[in-house]
Length: 247
Image 1 (cartoon, rainbow, N blue to C red):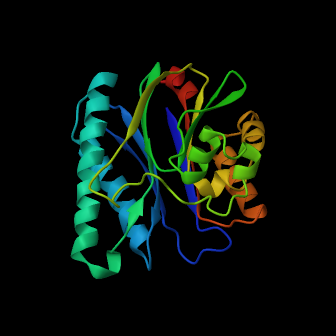
Image 2: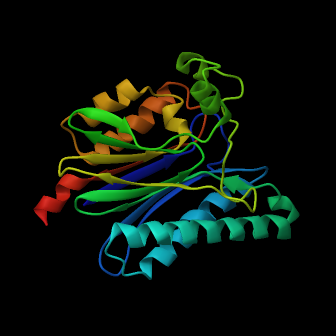
């Protein structure tokens, strides 16, 4: 298993509210996480780093070996982290209203468990196809699903960044958790919307299909998002399952 990630401030924002990480539990299972913080001043930074760091530390203390155990752990730990962020926001006035998206995956040999809340995404590059594993929890996605607007109109909708779910904003939380089967040559992509708002799925597919190092794929995606305007922070994490066969 080989994981590479890069988080970039982009061309417009003054600070980076994205945060990402990878963590191994006591039996060597890997957790990967990408969060995109929100809130005034530097509150978004605090929320995203809290979510990644706390989940990662908790994961390192586990010895789970099954997807069912991981699913229950994710539900419990993400809910706990939501309570922590809400509590911290209420405790400090400069952190009031902070929150974050979250997309996290635990990687097994033949499957992965992925959880998300907000509009940071998970994709699987498999059999020369790019498959979106997560669903955006956003106003625009709800409008697309209801048929009120087209997916083409959604790309430039003025309320594109309005989320219907996020971590740390409310005591109520609704988390999507799904188990997917994977193949040895698959690549997992976790990213913030700073990538997907700037780079099309077709272009992402083209880069992931190139015969270049995983590190170069990450840098190509970040660079391209900046070349397209870099309107937001950009975080890209790739996990290459093919590396398991080399262990």
